[in-house]
Image (cartoon, rainbow, N blue to C red; front, side):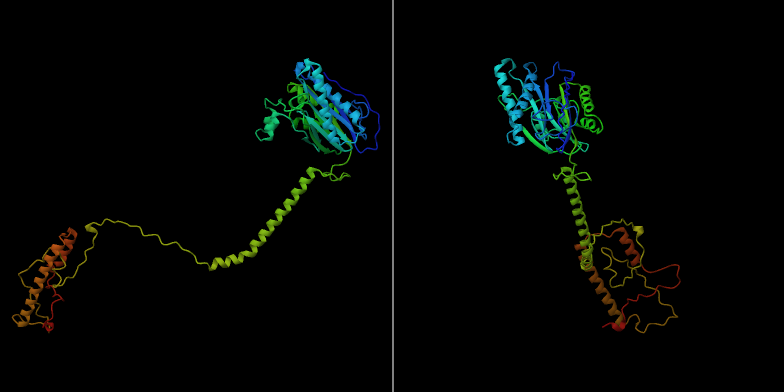
Length: 472
């Protein structure tokens, strides 16, 4: 069931800067049997508190919007919300002429409504435990003053972006501030209806918060109970309010319909006020006569400054690198190069068989023939070597058999042979190793007499034969 108020205010305030258009509606929803929400609006605080039917100029005392969401069910939650809006209306009518700051006046009005609820509950015990949330928006000149207690909200649509000006006094909002929940998780949290302060609680009196915002042309201010923002998310509200040429009454109808389509679990109340004519936002290119800064404009300016600073630091770094590179190159050319030490050679074991050893003749003289082989004597031969051929001339140093020099030579050979035998016995005592078959074969071949049956000539005499002229 909707309760539209459409009385027309004909007061013309063309001398004010802002021209406003206000619409308000409430709906019971699909679950509740009765509506516990209440609202009150006025285009002039000193005039009748009704919804203006046409756009109006904001008067000197300003215009006001109030939404209250009653709690208590059978304990008369709708009575608490009704007492709240009536008390705030009466408070402003009585205190409008007093010189008091607007923010302080809003807080005092909420506290006054709280006392009125407590007095009514004390006189009517059947309503004990009733309470309500409340949000107030007072537009004075081009300033928007908002005060609230509980989870009723105030939104601002500026340049197509929806901003939530109020912060819920609820348990879920506390978790959101602590970073334990995301905004989406908070929307679907089962305890989103648990509030931390309200009007009518004797143990915890309300402590309203205040926010102030400058209004510009085409700004849209919206107040609502949690029956709207608990059913549809902010992006849905934003998309519906973004229609600039659509009537505000149609926008409110779409918002209420979307909430009911989502379930309609609670009463739904929406109040919208659009700035039809006013100061131009500083973020627009055409400028404006309002000197108050826009937060989005400041952010864009800071971003540009940071970009130029980063670009300058980049160019400075490149220039420094180009200037210092030749110096570094000189240092690199003069600096000795530390080469790593060579890696140790790897050991390679190769197996060699006796067949792989080449046959190399080893010339052995009579003096060292016995010492060349350990543990084996050279073969003795009783036959004398054949005489040299007749056609060869005898050596000048040679002597005939039976000469004294030849006998002395034989004696010397015997003495050498005895020395070699003694040395062989010493070698046996020191080293008992026997020669390998390969070594024995080489030694046998080297020590065997140099006779070849295929040759007709006798073997040549050894060049190591002692010279008779050198004998003593």
